[in-house]
Image 1 (cartoon, rainbow, N blue to C red):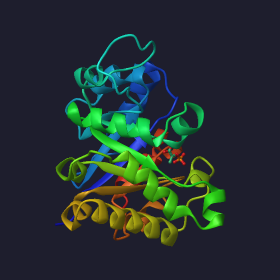
Image 2 (image 1 turned 45 degrees about the vertical axis):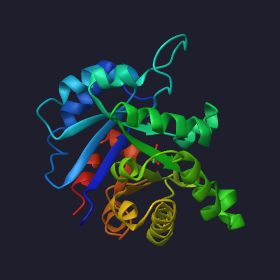
Image 3 (image 1 turned 90 degrees about the vertical axis):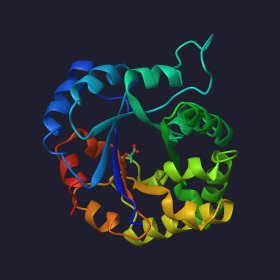
Image 4 (image 1 turned 30 degrees about the vertical axis):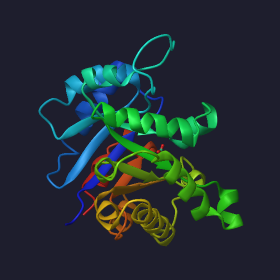
Length: 249
Ligand code: PEP
C-alpha cells in the first residue's frame, strides 16, 4: 500500500498570533490538496487562533514541542492534554534546535514520544547528523542510535502511525539541501532500522520525511524518492512557496 505523503511546516519562533492568522489566511487556498496531509506546526501561543483559522480546511495543527509529564510544577511547559484540548494532532519532537539549545536528549525525546501516543497525538520525531559526523562517515550509526532510543517501548502498532523526520543539521536553515541521493539513502537506512527493530510491515507503514532547506524547486525530486514520504519545512513554510511544496507534482 502506498504511503500517503505528509508535508509539515515548522514555523519555529516566528509569527505573533495575529500574524499567524494572517499567514493561515494567505496559505489556505494554496495548500489545498486531496493527496497530501498538510500540517502547520506553530508556536504554542499561536495554536488556538490557528486551530480556529484552519477549521473546515485540510490543514491540521501541530505543536513544536511538548512536555512529558501530565501536569504540575513545570513552569513554562505545555502538557499533552493542553495540546489535545486546543486541537493539536501532531507534535514535532527532538528537533535539532531543541537538542542544541534546550538540552533535549534521545532519552527525553523517547519520554515525549511515549506521552504523545498516550494522548493520541502523532509524533514527528526528528533525527539527523552534524556535518562533522557526515564527514567522519558515522551518519547512519548516529541516526540509528537516535531512532532506536527515541522508539524505546513504542509498540509496532504505534510506530506504524508516526512520522520520522530526517533532518541533516548542516542542511537546516542553511540553504544547503542534501542531495536527493543523500536524503534517499538515509531515509532508506531509517526504514531498514525500523524493520530490524520491529518488522517489515511496520517499516512499510511508517512515514519518513526529509527536512533541510526544502523549497519549491527541490521538493518534487525529493518527494519522488522511494523512501521519502514528504517533508518537514522550515523557512519556506512561512511563504507562498509552501503551497508549491504541498502541490509538488
Ligand atoms: C526545520 O526547521 O525543520 C527545517 C527543515 O528548516 P529549513 O527548511 O528552514 O531548513
